[in-house]
Amino acid sequence: MAVAVVAAPVAVAVGEGCLATAPLCAANLLEIASGGASGGSAIVGGGAAARATAKGVASLTAAGDDFGIWASKANAKAGYTGVIIHGAKHDFGLTVDAWKKGTNFSFRALARLVRQHPNYNGGPVRLISCETGGCDATAAQNLANALQVKVMAPTDIVWAKPNGVLRVFLKPHGKTGEWKVFEPMSGGGVGP
Image 1 (cartoon, rainbow, N blue to C red):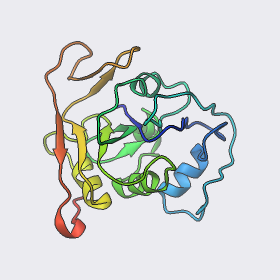
Image 2 (image 1 turned 90 degrees about the vertical axis):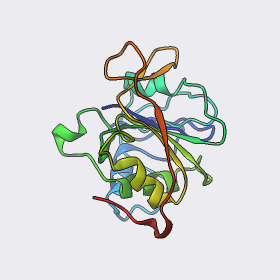
Image 3 (image 1 turned 45 degrees about the vertical axis):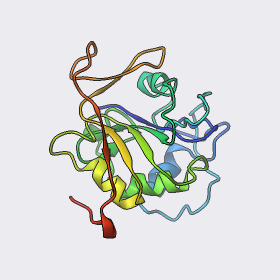
């Protein structure tokens, strides 16, 4: 389960503290994701270091997370804001072990994070997040409904290579999965 958030030209690294050059840190991201009272874009915390990313990319993975670092090097998809975050069929996490720690969160929380991200100006999202567009998955469709935009998501695990090449496959070598586009449902209907 791996993924990160991609947007305009600002690097966002999430960890246990403030971001050096970005407006959000882990504590505030979790607060925003849970509907907390942060409300602002100035964040406090301690420990994460912002990392440079390609134009159109911001990463919502923990500082030092190889997947987030490597996925942020991927070629941008024209017309889409990339969102790199760890994912599963029905929800998301800032770290690969978020599910084990109970810190995973819903599409509603991710939609809040995306909307509040300084590099997101609306429009389609390329969700670089494992299995979120797979069979029986609800994460990508629910995010499309919540944001009322197209969401492109992988049908299987996303593997990022150090050079930014992305593969959608059950194992790190090969390419059997695909990127699937989810159109928002009228009325913003959502699943579980």
